[in-house]
Image 1: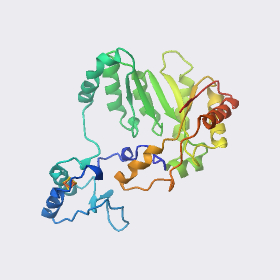
Image 2: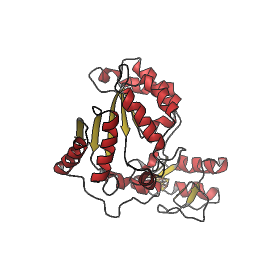
Image 3: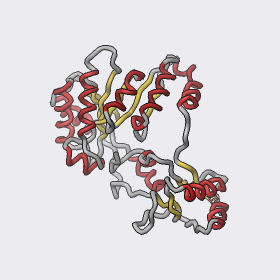
Image 4: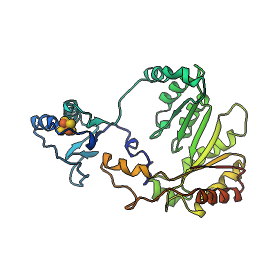
Length: 295
Ligand code: SF4
């Protein structure tokens, strides 16, 4: 998915990419020296993507192409040259065993509550990896959860479910055309996976389930959208926990990192508690019995 308002725009790409954190830059120009040695010229500022350059993303004027080994080697040299971490990869490869070991260092804290939640991006894009991590931490007695948008084949969901105590699943936009316009993909798979969860949640030995809608002004936070989503959920499982998440204006600050424009020219404010409660009442009116708001 590629939601217009994505809260984690750096998590959308499924390949690693270079990022430029301007505030960390100490102006040493070592990156420029490394680029010059390879015949490239680094720009001083973040450079927006251009149509005439073949690249997954342009970072400070130099194209990055994930599947181009030579280009990757160039970026390795540039990033290695940066002493302050202003130029850095957005992600790294890790094995499920190594990640589980890191997570289990917090085992003493988990004994007093909390647990491990795999979030994203979309953790169900790597179902075997996610299942292995979850199985390892769950068998150590840690509560496990996942946050997913469900735009994946059902088999991905089924692979992970046996190792989960709780599922947070999004239902953002009602209607196929509106869903494509707002998120870049149709909602058929999401609806099928939601039905599976809503049905399963009524049986024993199934993880508990929360369905969530992030309230994004103009996109998801409309009476019609909340009513339609709630009617669908209520028709399948009226007792399901439905949570409305308040708009979070902080995402806007991250868009410069990925050279992308945010969906709002003027960042809207969060919804007031009264406005959130009004949306919750719409969902209750549509037949849902367990609606909460997250301020
Ligand atoms: S190497 Fe890093 S800190 Fe130095 S100028 Fe380049 S981005 Fe800034």
